[in-house]
Each structure stands twice: as structure tokens, then as C-alpha cells.
Amino acid sequence: MLAKDEHLAATAVDFSTMARNAQMLIDLASEILLSVSTSEGIGLRNQIYSSSCPPPMIPMLTSMVNGASTNKDTLLACAEEDGLFAALPADCQPIEDHMSELQVTLYECLLGSRRVRGTSPINALVKGRKASLQKTLASRRKRGATNKFVEKKTLPR
Image (cartoon, rainbow, N blue to C red; front, top):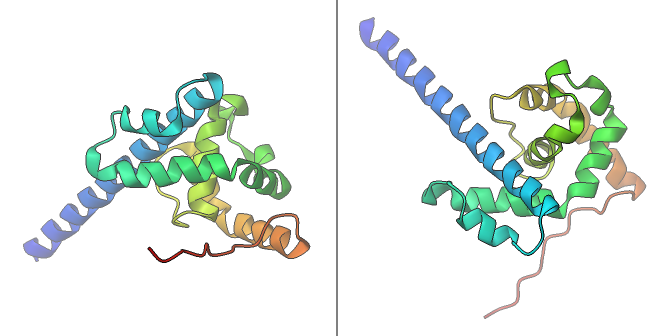
């Protein structure tokens, strides 16, 4: 019986570590997006590699930053159409201060891994509205307001 309790405690520690790592990646990605939007001359790739991200996590950070910056208009249009901005908690106001974190979280929810991980209030809000956000994106794609997913053709080497 004791071994089972120890296993459950170790699993809980692993989940909290995973949530902290996910939140760290979201924070780093939102800092990079915010700094790129406010300054010129420093590209995304330079900022990603000069960040304090652990080397094994750089590919995930790269995909989050590139995806969130490329699909910014689609993500924010889905959030606005779904009414996400009206449902923001009081500690996330004004939205301009948290826009890059929201953008990264929406990317992960709608177009990225489709999992919402992290510990911030914005992550909790997006996680609670994930189904309606995905339905909004699907309806936008059906209407033609958003491009449908098209797999890129790769050329042989």
C-alpha cells in the first residue's frame, strides 16, 4: 500500500514539473513575441537562441514562436469571435499586457499540439473554452474566413 502512495506522489510531482516547464516555455515565447513586436533589427531565431531556454526545449520553443507569430491574425480573430476577450479574468486586464501570452496559448490550443498546458490564469481560461474555440475555428474554415489546413508538399532532395 505504501508503494502505491509513493508512486502517486511521484506522479503528482512529475505533473507539476511538466506544468512548470510548459509555463516556462509559454513565458519565454511570449517574451520573444513581445520584444520582436516592440524592437526592430533582432529576428525571431536570434532571440530564441539567445533566450534562457534549455537546449533540449529549443525546438518546441521555436515551433511555438514561429507558429504564434505566423498565425496571429487567425488566432486573435477566433478569440474575438468566440468572446474570449470579454471573459478574461480581472488579473489579466488590460489585455494588451497579456496579448503575447494569449497568442501563444491560443496557438498551442488551436494549431499547435492542441494541448493547453501551464499554470497561468490565461491558460486556465483557454483550457476551459477549448471546445468552443475549436468549433469557432472550424466554422471560420467552413465559411472561408480562415484558410483550411493544407499539408506542405516536400520536394525530394
